[in-house]
Length: 116
Image (cartoon, rainbow, N blue to C red):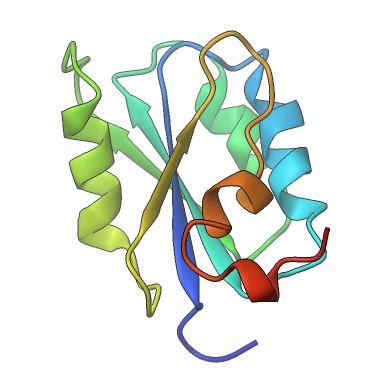
């Protein structure tokens, strides 16, 4: 992998410690690996940080807002501040616990690089 990833995935979350692992696993299973995953906790008071930390991958980083912002924009903007991807950062989130994969997000930027 290059020093800077091709793209960044920003995963904003609030109180999803029990649901975030399948989402991260889904992202990591993608055949294209030149990305970083920035997980931003929006004032999480549960075990979300520990769930993220359980993955031994240098492609994953954790950021945490001190308190819940009440909107999607604050955690997304925090992720954007830390994004290192060459292309425009991409956002993904879990809402109902269903995984959102990097394939869905990345195809907006470089469809030819994503395996089907």
